[in-house]
Length: 600
Image (cartoon, rainbow, N blue to C red; front, side, top):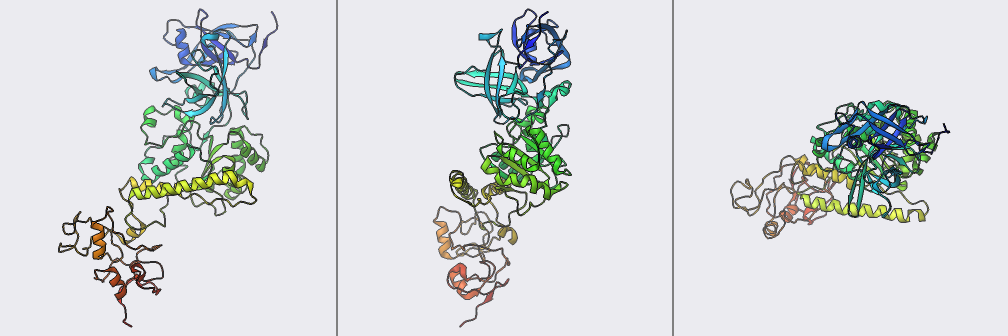
């Protein structure tokens, strides 16, 4: 018998039926086991309950070529009908292959990775053909299937005969390592796509292959065995936070986002934990399609959108860095070397670290690892999310701040949702333009100042939360003043004041008090003849919280009132209400009472 030779990828095998007709590909894990797709086994007729009980495995990388009969290992065929949920099977050879090879299935980041696959299409059924693809995350509502896109138009593409083929990383830290298998293809005219099942999903469906897996898990914030955090999105603010972070991580944004998680991260009820799980292949493998498709819009990330997630609660700096080295396949070394390797990594990483302030040494973790990453994340294209249960350190660099606390400042008055959305949209466009300008010209100048944290994301969260609870936003001034007072307007013909909506006397809807709550006849006239629903009155540049909710002034004209009374129910800090009427320049200290002005 001649000497056995094989190529650098001896795990490539072809799956044939009992007569030797090719139907797909497989991965030789060791001399007795082959991993392939469940539907490929079904095509050969050797599926559990099928017409025959065996199929054939043929090598394409060994010399001399060998062929062995094989059967489905007990409890190792996962295929849920038409949904193709799972679609994976483990085959056991009747006789050892004799290659002496052992193949590891690697858990690796999936975002933006260029991969290759070797299958047996109709044009090359016996020898096989390779093709390249780019991983682009989840698409289509299928269980844990990662989308593969065409790299070069006109090149060979995945089609029937590639199912079960090992997906191999072409470059980077995981070069030449198998990270999953091809499960389906899509061809419609010029459109080309395919799907793969990542190692994390395979390991959930087939626990028998655990000994063949390697690499760090993508999600270490919560075990997949823990209950799915239901009810988190019932809270309007947590829903808004989830949507905003989904928008950031699902797009082209890069930088550092600091998020407030409260004390729920470790308990498994945090909105951040839930969002991380939607991007985790292992977690997606145990979720039903209804749990994902039934979720509110813009609350589910693409598969593999988050490369690594880690809960730092009670962990040392060495444990956090060890996880990053294992997960990203880094060379290791001192903390500064690990930071440098992450900053140089291509494609840039997406990393989530939660409960940082609950780590064993929070200051050391930030100083040696997370702080340097946060300072350079945007310039390197990294998406870094840092979770704190309390306030983050004052010297931590970040680009976005999302937290569940109420805003201390807001524009008072009756502001419509449309006006708020327009204003936030303008602010977003301005901040995005500033980021693009700095990216284009920042390196051309010495010591360019860092852009301030973006304000629009935090405002979007508040706007979305308010829109889900009421049609119009309410300012802190109105909240401080209590329920809006339905006071009688000047010119109202109804005795007793405006009590209904709209008022039967002046035909105007009740509105919160402005100053003392009285409008001049001119303002009423403008309101009646203006398309706006609120009167146009002189506005101060900055307002302060109301200190008095009652006023004894009864002047129908605000300017006349301002001249005759000194009211402190409303006005800029350190001034009287005379500034509102623009008829005086008094700067007397505020008071919580209205009093007659002394004649001079």
